[in-house]
Length: 253
Image (cartoon, rainbow, N blue to C red; front, side):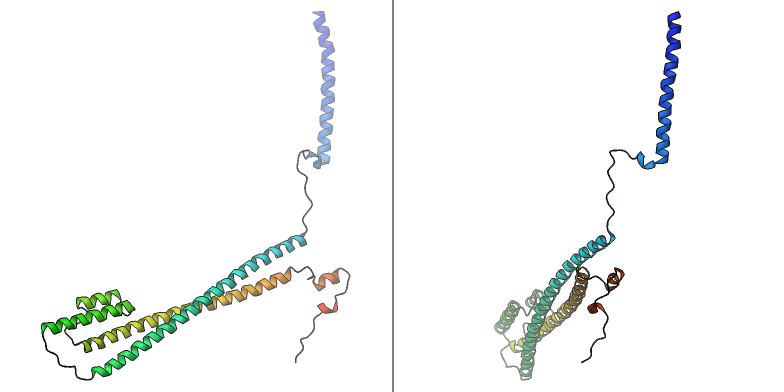
């Protein structure tokens, strides 16, 4: 019993002294952290890098923008060339369509003059009507293979629809066929003219876009040139502006 009491009297003061020392150290560390908060950063934290230069950032942005505008200007120039080639192709097609229509119009006008003459008299026999029908079918097939009659028009001729009468004399049938061919070529010419106008408008828009982007690309390239230090910046740096940077009136004549 005395040994236990002895150990208790010895160990308790020692423990109290140890806890007092630890408490003093903790209070000292806490006071240091309050006085200098930057010490609270952990040792394994990444160091903060140097601040970026605003001028370098602006220069990098200008270079990136100049590169993007240059690429866009190159693409716009290629598109303008393609649009111009397409317009030239449409213009050539329009010229061919007009030539074809002019030829068909001349043929229809010539046959219209011949139609004013009285039709030759032929016997009205089944053989004659069969011959007239064969002639009409042959002429219609030839016109279809030339591209002067559509498939639907050819079907009308073979089925004797839409005013096609195989009993007419071949001279009359030839006049009717020439008029149908002329009307078809006129419709083709008008369609070609519409395509040519659309191609022209597209080429003009593409050319305008290419010119605008080319101008912007040149201006952007000028802004990123290393020797483009403005005059106010040099004056602010303590050096006078050179004569070449001073404003001069434009010379006339």
